[in-house]
Length: 124
Image 1: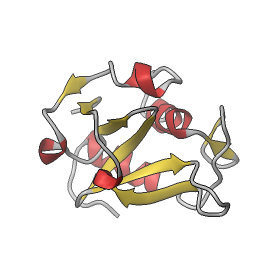
Image 2: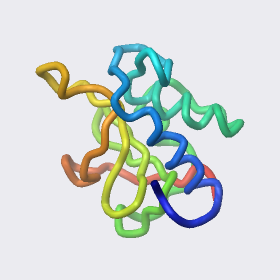
Image 3: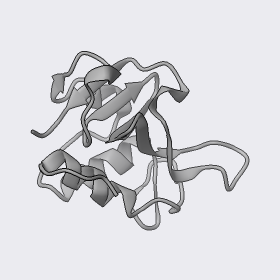
Image 4: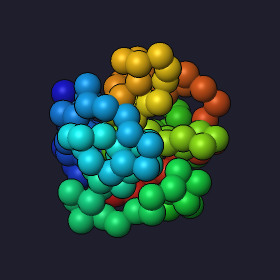
């Protein structure tokens, strides 16, 4: 569980409860399966924030925080063709399509597991 207060912490903790659920390409269900951008979109929808169902489009949302060093829980971490939610302590929760199954699904990884293109703050 992410400690602290603020909407971003609430977003991170809400997202973490879905760890272990499946990855489904094109999916937006937090319980039955979502892809990376569908996961982020559906988590934020719970907080009344509308995001597009595309990792590339999500990279244009919110405000640039200037890199992973400035990331706060709830920020979205953008990669080439992928997106996740920062949960603090250098980690993200994301819907991963890693093969072979069951390595994929909603899981926690180091944020730096691949090249970061940007970190966006969606909520304060």
